[in-house]
Amino acid sequence: MNRGSQKMLRVPHNWREAVSYTAGQAIFDEGETGDQMYVVLEGEVDLYIRGRPVETLGEGGVLGEMALLEAAPRTASAVARTNCKLVPVTQKRFNLLVQHTPDFALQIMRVMAGRLRAMDARL
Image (cartoon, rainbow, N blue to C red; front, side, top):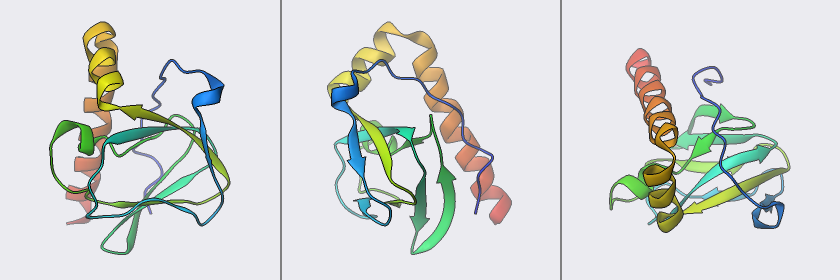
């Protein structure tokens, strides 16, 4: 499972926004409709494609970003590897971050490019 390709992402947040998950708890499932992405504040999250582990994310890791970029079902499942806290980012907040924080969009593109390279390497 890949641990090295992730980029750290910082999202301005209030600690009350954080959502807690316990180890083994599903965050979202492949194929479902998504309306937000998440940034890992604490703990670790495993990503699976077709039931196979593909990446483990730690602090600053991003998951679910594709749901905000295209209207398509989720391409992976996410499960809390450890007890963790995530910051949800809605479409509205994502759009504001892209508009007002130029580096945010670049960071998201770097995350996606890293995942694409990792998938290419597996093929």
